[in-house]
Image 1 (cartoon, rainbow, N blue to C red):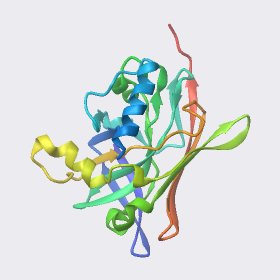
Image 2 (image 1 turned 180 degrees about the vertical axis):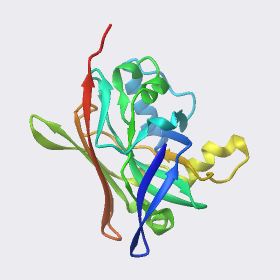
Image 3 (image 1 turned 45 degrees about the vertical axis):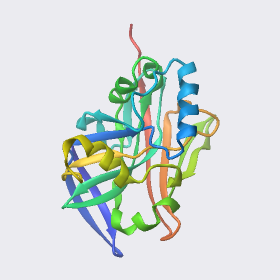
Image 4 (image 1 turned 30 degrees about the horizontal axis):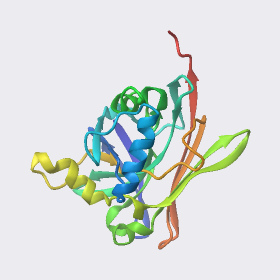
Length: 230
């Protein structure tokens, strides 16, 4: 997937074109193990299989990463969730935003397949990781959905509740003997709970806010629902 970013760093903005050849979704990426176990048990009651390890890394087809303002999904059962997106380019790490859009009906059968069948919308703005890594825990993720024609806050929380990106990168690469991502590798880094429970919406808006530097990364997309034919 050929991704196009505007990199905001050192007070300037420049374009970056990146051929993304490896896309990874980091699941169960929270720091509070007790809270993760509680969530696993909650999902198990809904029929979602227990993860084989925590955190768990899902390889997703690189073609599923998109930067469009609209995606297409089959049936009304999918929903988005904001995640920080860490990617490698020019021998450095950058941070953007992406939505781990997931088919919730299929999730009860296979988490991996539920993630693979949906596009992963990503924003086109990004920062150098080095500029925010020192205050990573202060960064805030938020998302909004549309319900009854109103914009409703759907997620909000600081990244202090999630494992830092380098820890996730090391966990994913542990078996390979590598220490950092090769250029063209991108990983979503976990999310925060949905306010009022996970539910679908055809409109999803997301933001990563840096209170220290008072700046945000934002992206908005809509979902076109295709018929679910039996």
